[in-house]
Amino acid sequence: MLREKLLGAPAAAVWGIDAIVRRALDGRTSRRDATVTLASVLIGMRRAGDSQGIDALRTEAARAGLTVVVALLGDAPAHRALARLGRLREVCIPERAPFRRWPLAAELGLTRSGLLRLRRTSHGEGFAMHPSPILIGRLLRERWLELEDVLHVAARRPTTPALAFELASHDRWLQRLEVREAMAQNPFTPTGIVLSLLPSIRRRLLWHLRDAGDAHPLVSAAAAELIALRT
Image 1 (cartoon, rainbow, N blue to C red):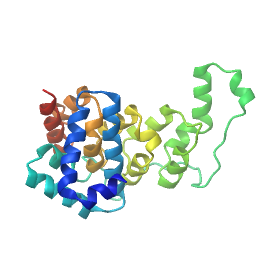
Image 2 (image 1 turned 90 degrees about the vertical axis):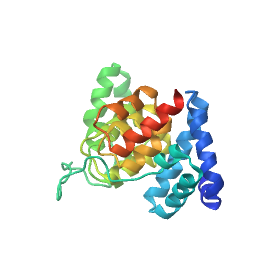
Image 3 (image 1 turned 120 degrees about the horizontal axis):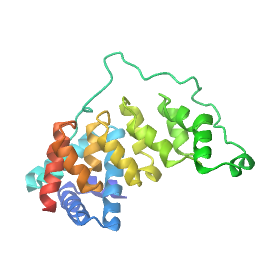
Image 4 (image 1 turned 30 degrees about the vertical axis):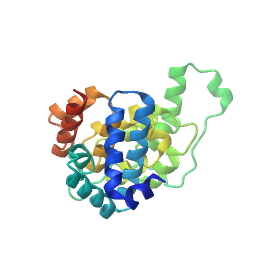
């Protein structure tokens, strides 16, 4: 597994990370896929609290002069966060509530816009705005879930680190560029997650994160490093 390779030989692993990032800069999907896999592993390590492993990689990257890798392995709280003692709005649905699936016969008689409204009313938007990572995790495993519903979770402002890590741990959705970019633009997404995602997003969003002033300084600096590699 990639995680074991990273931790087993950090001095060599950082050169592999650098190579993955540089190969992805041409924008080819196949090469970008490798950066998504890398992001998934790094985010999983952060969620598990394995800061020592990432710190070891960052130390080796600094020793080797791999400034882009150093930037991508940084971490900090989200650029914005709930106020102290603040809470997300409540959604009156129990964490273990069954998800309602509208009968197929009813769906067949609807236009796509009507179907989307029905799904959002009956489950998608209400569930997607739930404050519980447990319920969100269950929702993200449902096969009927639409990308539009997942983007509600990814772009939600405010959100919590627990919700962001829950979404980022579902590879099915992390593989979607739209989800990665929505998370990267959300100032409530933990900075470590955003940094891990940067090599797998499009150049125009990197420019935005570098210049717009609404991203964490570590994110802006890392975006600038990546843009410099592409020029």
